[in-house]
Length: 389
Image (cartoon, rainbow, N blue to C red; front, side, top):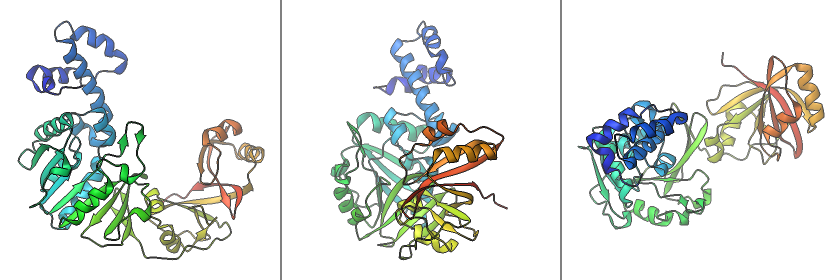
């Protein structure tokens, strides 16, 4: 879809309604039928938009996704609605009433900010992306709070806004960009812009090196449903603070500058910290919560003899520990009649699917195997999740 305008006409909107629930397997037949009454390009655009809306449900929910407009990159790169809503709440808790949203994309963050009652200037330099953001603003009835502007963000004044939110592009022609200075615009520009604003938040890749975080920033890693989604650098909050926030919730673990946990023998329980906790380097805080230590100094698994409640890690009861040996594992699983096998790994080159093929689990029972290292030695730990009482 290179031109959004035809889809915004009465004919385009009616066509979008007609193809809303098209089964991909029936798309060719549907297209052939519709092209008898509508221009071929419009039919292709409507079917393409229907596919994008179906993909977007996972991020935006069925109701919003069914009304919004998307580009392929927009679906891929936009913020999940739950994460955007959480960030908007943080802005309101800081007393923010207006935000300049730079590199706004299709408008996902601007929508969340506006729904939190914040006035938004949403800026993107790509004409189609800006047009989609404007269409989404109108479709969701947020035009009074969101101004969409097609412009180069480096040339836009943010004076008069309480805060800046910037989401530089982290994809290039060859895929993901890992060097923050290769963002578009580069992280150094975004940081300078943030420092010039009263408050600011910069969305960055969750793999950003900790040494790249400016001293003036608070760094927050966010996961949703156990999946790490992003990192955010906040300015004008608590410089130097590191936090991990888990959604839904939110549940937030703050850094306490603890020393590295000790390496200790495998205990009865293994705790798997949430990915945001690991990215934020807050495994020591989890280890302190559960009275545990590490299996290996380089592996983010915590072990303890006690079962303690924590919101930041999933506990497993360990029933067996064996040196890495596929034949022994296969025999043990056969003996236990394990047919449902979950394979987790840290510090192992073995792929979970490869291991499943080799052990051929069969039976009515379930187990979890951890492929990891214990004090440097390749090890298999077998156990089961601890169910909440």
